[in-house]
Length: 193
Image: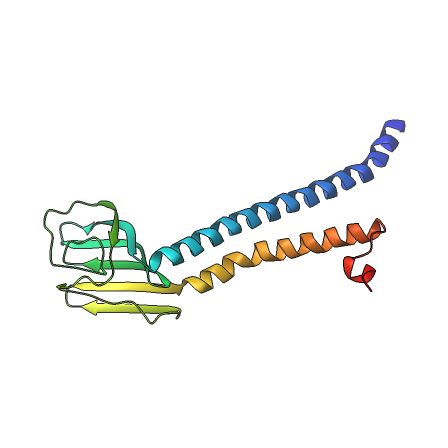
């Protein structure tokens, strides 16, 4: 019976340890999400600045059904003030649907990255970006291509990714201020009067 009483008394401490572990785990997950969000915020701002001078496209293009001659691809296109995610199926072989000069029979399936200066003339197909600073979902169809795209302005991405680090920074400043005031230090504004 004594052994039974010892295990019953040890259980409340085990519960406290579990609660501390849960709090610690929540703290670790929150800090990790803030760090990832801060990295994504910096990346969105960098892409935004880079999109003012150039267009970047990256993705994958390859066969969806080679016997039927169906080519498909997906990727992202960074243009002036916006990020465009796209998916397409086509009878023509090409990599980036923002500029198609025709069917490229020598093209092999695979990943790609293209760096373009804005305004390339002489294109057979050009879908053009949705209006700047708009969140848009569109589909574009031609007899030989079906294109689906989602456009997101960089200001929206920066606001979404910048929220958690801003919240964490404000919380840190408020906690620091409370600690300083608890030690008996008066704020500078109160001492100057």
